[in-house]
Length: 116
Image 1 (spheres, one colour):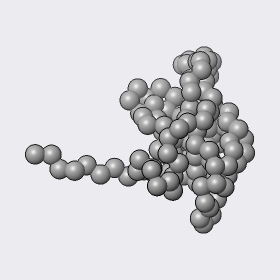
Image 2 (cartoon, one colour):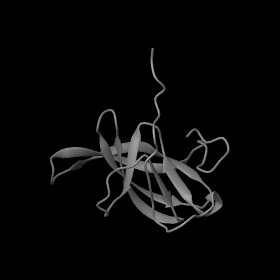
Image 3 (tube, helix red, strand yellow):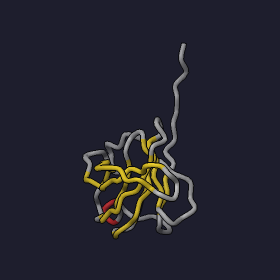
């Protein structure tokens, strides 16, 4: 018999206190982890951010392949990373994925239909 498995969502935000969903943008996608490039934070399941332009690092949890995306985020929207290519990084001798943020129909945090 299997016991119920509870998973918790780990998220990072770049604001203090509570902000309603109409004031923030969310980056999330099942099977991926995210962080703001330039910070020394560990990758999380989702980013909750004030609107703006960000360089977002991402890694696929299954393959450990990762890269970055420059994203223009708007308030009240949820985004996923769409991998659009890869580039060779001379300094490491490896390839990195290149992504873009695209609007997603995933439920937004604080939504009554949220999956978590």
